[in-house]
Image (cartoon, rainbow, N blue to C red):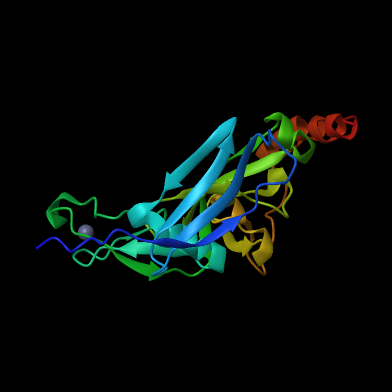
Length: 212
Ligand SMILES: [Zn+2]
């Protein structure tokens, strides 16, 4: 039997659109959470105002606001997903509905890239290390920024942790958090490949210093 779906009532409305700013580029400007705390709608300003109704994925985004990482787990095969999948992807599980579970804020780097160019709003933060990381043994990987590391020191499978922004700055999006090397991690010694990346990246630091 399909579970009964009641229309949610959005009662906890939070508005953080900057006053006196008409054009804010790409920015989350507010959200609303339903009375029962189960659903979130997000307001995104990108040239114009969009509302993203997160529906069954709401727990993920409400979790970010609370500083928690929620993924899903298939009750049949036990596979875990972050980003979450609402239904299992294994054919034998016949699209079983996954359960929400809280994950440990720990991950391993699957792959990464170093960005030496970006949109205007991020130019001064270059170079930016972007990683795809596998959180707490999940079967899916999620992209986010890796901070507190020299770009040439990133390694496959290196342990990283999830670090949240202060609560008042969170908007219920993946930019509420980032990755950092896990406690106790030490970079491996320099080698030819690391030297190659360093040679490519150092001019980016020099160029960024010239930006006004
Ligand atoms: Zn499954």
